[in-house]
Amino acid sequence: MNSQINDVINLLEKFYLATINTKEDRYYLINLVDYISFINESSLLVKIVKDIEKQKNENYKSYYQLELKAKKELDASKKIIYNIIKKDNINDAKINELVRRIEAWGDDISTLNFDLDTLFNNIPEEYRRGLYNQSNNIDYKNYKFSKTLKLFHNEKQKIEDLKLTEFWHCWYRIKYIPAIFKLDNAEYNLSFDNLSEEEQQYFVETQMLRREVLKEISGGVNDKCLSDCKNSLIRLHNHFVSKLRDIELSEDVNKKEKIKVGAGKEVNIIEIGEYGKIYINRDYNNLIEPRDSSHDNKYWKKICDIAEGEDVIYDLGTKKYFNSNKTNPIYNTLGYEKTKILEKKGDYMKAIIEIKNITNKKINRSKGQRDKK
Image (cartoon, rainbow, N blue to C red; front, side):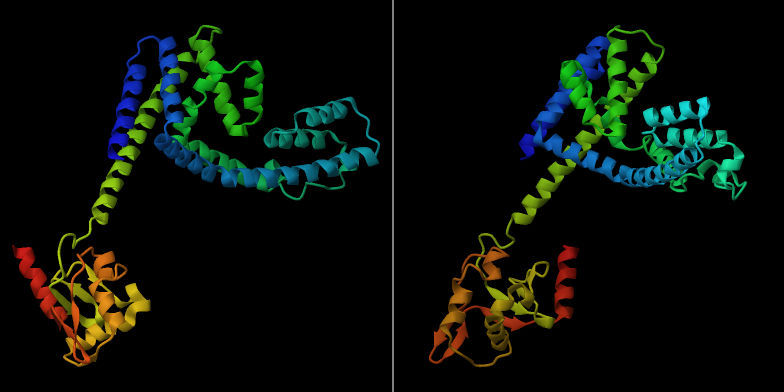
C-alpha cells in the first residue's frame, strides 16, 4: 500500500508542477484539466475529495434548512397580501407589475422579501388592516414577512467567512474545469441543472474564467479570478499530499500493530497479576485479561489455581486449550508459538513451564529496570 501511496503522490506532484509552473494562462487551465482528471481517477484521492465535499454539505446543512423555512414563511405572507388585493379588488398598474415580477423572480428569498415589501407598501393603507405595522424596530421592518430570513442571512454570512478557510471552497473553485472544457451545450445544461444553488455559482464562475482566459470574452476580473484559482490549487495540493502522508503513516502503524509480540517464541513462564491479568514471558506491556476470552474463563481459572499451588484435576479440554488451541489469546492475540504448557500426572494437571502469581509492585519494578537500560 505504501508504494501505491508514493506512486500517487509522485504522479500528483508531476501534474501539479506542470500546471503551477506554466507561464501562459491558456496552458495553465489545460494542464489543470489533467491534474483534476487524475484526482477523479485515483481511488485514494477520490476518498479525500469525498471528505472535503462531506464537510461542505455539513456547513450548508443549516443554510438550506433555514432557506426552506424562510421560503415557507414568505409564501404565507405572499398569500395574505394576494388575498387583500383579490378581496378588495385592487387594480393598479404598479401593483400588477409587481405581482408579475414576484411570480417570475420569486425563487430567490431575499428578492422575494424585498418585492413583497414594495408590493405591500403600494397597497392603499385603508386596505392593509393594520397588518405588519406592529413595530418600528428595524429588524421587524426588514424581516416582517419572515423572521427566519434574518437567521438565514446570518448563516449565509457565516458561510462566506468559512470560504476563507475551508478546503471545499478551494476544491469547488477548480472542480468544474474539466467539465467546462469537455461538455457540449446539451451536456453543459444538464450538468448545470443538476447542481445545487451554490454549486451553480462555482460552475458559472469557472465558465467565465475559461472564456476570459481563452479570449472568448473580454472582462476586468480575469487577473483576480485566475489568481484565486492558482491560490486554491496550491492550498488543495498541499492538503492532498498531507492527507496521503497521513494514510501512509496510518498504514505503517497498522502494520506494526499486526506484528505479533511473541512471534517465533515459545511460552516459558505465565504470570498471574492482580485482578486476573495474565502476562507471558515477563512481557508486562502486553497482557491478556479474562474478559478477552470470557467463554474460556473456566480454563483460565484452572491456570490461576495452579499458580496458587492447588491440585487441579486433569481435564483434556484444558490441556488442549493451552497446548494447541489456536483461539487461545496466547497464540491468537500475542502470537506465541504453540507450547506444551500442561501435562497429565496421574489424576492431576501439572505445569510443564513456570506458572505463578505476581504483584503490581514487582511488575512496576521490572518495568523501571528495563526503562533504565
